[in-house]
Length: 164
Image (cartoon, rainbow, N blue to C red; front, side):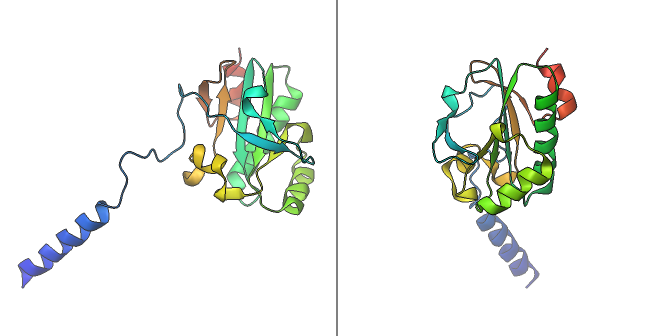
């Protein structure tokens, strides 16, 4: 009877493990990867903008949502740093909030520069969310002028160091 229980446990564990896709990265893109291109809408506009058309020596992608406290705080700090520091960085702050009213209030409350703000209103169901593998948490990426990720999940204080 004791052996039957162990056999059952082993079978159960092996069946659960077999559902894990071992080839799928679980925590977004990494330093050295080329950032996948995407299309987003600027805040308050119906037009679309392509990542590949946003040229800058350094491009900071910040993915966030109002319902995610950490990503929201990081985005606000990075937005403030880019707006106040004399550094050659263009920021693309992409919100995954599905309701524009929530985004509008968050932008006002966090004093986010709206010229840096973009929106993906399909939220977690968007291709962008899947492409950047944000299911394990929102990230930010610093890209060089070739679109290669040179830093990931940086803080506002790290930003100046990376762009020297």
